[in-house]
Image (cartoon, rainbow, N blue to C red):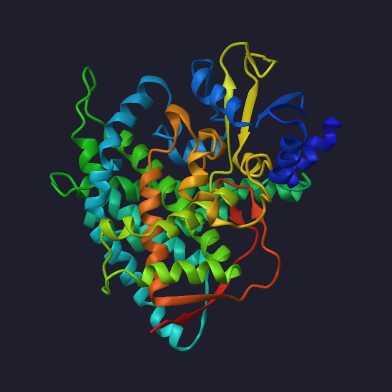
Length: 435
């Protein structure tokens, strides 16, 4: 395919373009882009080779200057010894025991949020799904990181997130002078918003000094890695920003897509509701309750297959190496499109069909481990994968217990490639009470 045509397709329909390439060319394909090539790796064996077997030959691609400004040198973008220390320090908060201890307050927070839906349900009013789930996901992420301190800053943080979303740069379709000027204005607004965001996070870090409350910040402060100084407030700020954004945005996005799919597949929704209704009645769900929801687990996994919030990942070659019979030059970018790999028909028959039975115990056991990777894979897999499942099951189950969501939006909804894979338009749902 012509280099110019590839560039246009990557800009305007990247996920669909990469899926076509993956299905047609198989394990690895060299795509001409700009002055060089992008190497797309799609099949499970080669994904394992890239992310596990040859991991020392590659580094994470951190080419996004804007993301660097927002997150700094937190866990997502750091490398080497800095990354290893951050990963080890944060890991205890994401182990099963620690997460199970958080389930009661998380469940109560979800229930409190849904209480606000009751009046709308009485009027059969509709909601903007993104707006509602964003606020809930931010609250969960903030309290997990800062404990009760976050509640005093929550409204101002929510406002800064809205400002950040408005000022986030988008690639203009045509580089006219007016669009360049607008981009410059957005960059200035983004910088101002991030300065205010940093100030809020530093204030929360300062206010929590001396607190013994169980939260992520307390865990990081207690880290005493051999030969390392305690984290500075600036380092803590970068780490907390990274965990906050990664935590709330992926939760919000995955919940939007899951509710959208359930609204379009009433038989799946009905089966899921039957499972939830078998739980003992009550307002707060426990960790044991979550273990009793295998079908919700299947629903969420199938939603992630179709619309994983992290739709792609990439690595940069630190040295020349061989991958799938191709010579990968030093400095070349190798990409894995989760969106494309999750649609390879040899691993996922009728790949566009929403079918939670794909994740039954029998079908999952027979599947290649690297055929499904919504949380990436290898040593830099998502540290919050188990947390994401806990939160998702809590939210899905508690919504299903109390409400039915009816799809109001009739226009086609497509995935849009961004920092996460958001829907291309707002999705509105009508709330109906089940009680």
